[in-house]
Image 1 (tube, helix red, strand yellow):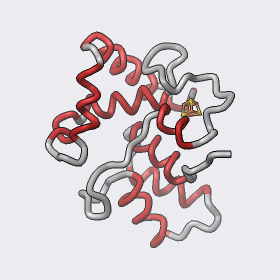
Image 2 (cartoon, rainbow, N blue to C red):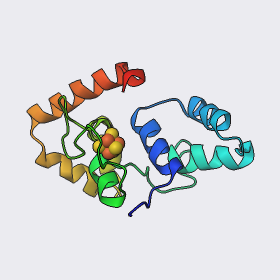
Image 3 (spheres, helix red, strand yellow):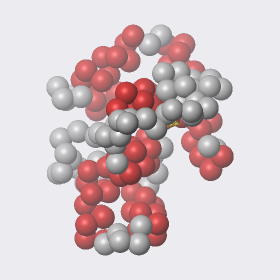
Image 4 (tube, protein in one colour):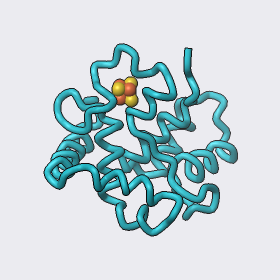
Length: 147
Ligand code: SF4
């Protein structure tokens, strides 16, 4: 069994990709975990998972696609979505939102040597497919509660 991701990595990754307000994510963690304590939860959530404190904890946002989650865990076994598909009915929402996040923040990612490689992969995706990713991501963002 390969499980390397923990809860914070997976849910924090999704919250960042879904562009949920850090305050709402912090409140959610405090509400669902009985052992969550604010002075521990806040820096981990805002600083590590959401890159919401100006990069004082981490030098880059840690984002992952569904394909990466599949490679590093067994979470995708049996899921109705396909981690490697970027848009469309069978696309993994994490993958769609991951590529959409890179498209949206391309300039910031390209400005740092630590993140430039991630946007380099964007160049391999046609303009048409990038438009489809953005459109599908917008649909997902408008229907987060239905996923
Ligand atoms: S394929 Fe399913 S389980 Fe895997 S990351 Fe995507 S939504 Fe999550």
